[in-house]
Image 1 (cartoon, rainbow, N blue to C red):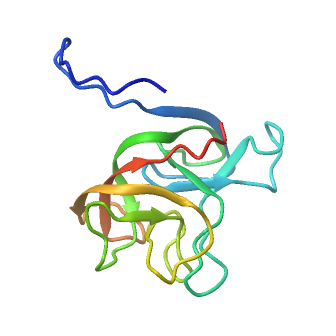
Image 2: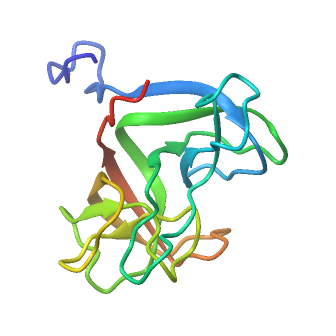
Length: 159
């Protein structure tokens, strides 16, 4: 992964990002968190993604969330997923304790599939996927969620 450039030589600071192009097995909206779809082998096992599912039990997060959709697809097809670095306007469950610096995990049981959830002391399941670096508040067109955050995605090392 590239080094964060702060010199501004070309007028911009560079936030290194990491992307992977995979097969989306259904419609996915930019900003939703995704997981590996183990039921699809279009590009070989592990080569397909779907919207991250919620945890199976109370306080359990979705176990296989690893990145955020960097574009929207309206049906199954190729999709670019961001797996590391800064992402603006990710879907996050509207939790009172989502603040800057909060650890974010896959969707908790009872939350909205495809939306990251704030980790709490009672949370278990999948890994910390990202940290909230700016809480955006409500936005438009956010099916099932009322909060957006700029996040720093943690590279899970899968790709």
